Image (cartoon, rainbow, N blue to C red; front, side, top):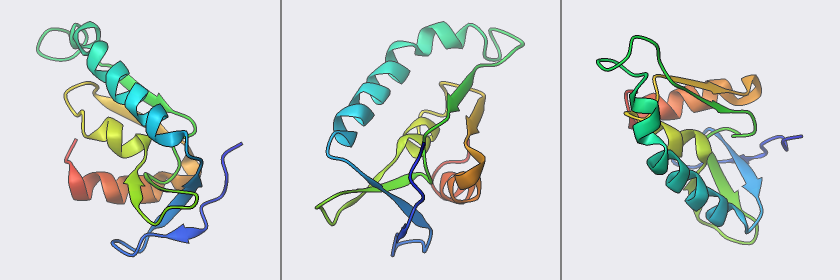
Length: 111
């Protein structure tokens, strides 16, 4: 179960998820996965294919995170995925944080 965000990002006033120190490594794997599978998904994205490719993030949180014991606020998996806008046509996330994700995503990348 995802923890309820209780920290607020001073940059945008939206919630931030408190995460463990393993998060940076997890996000590195996510970036590498999105890059490595981009060609496979491209077959389904216009103009090559008429369908689409979805990125489903069930435990993504509100899009920003703060590693316990550190002051820096980092991008979470929803924003990492959104910045790879050519990798998918649809993004699906948990409903508890969807409002914050939408606001942050459209503020940084119109995907």
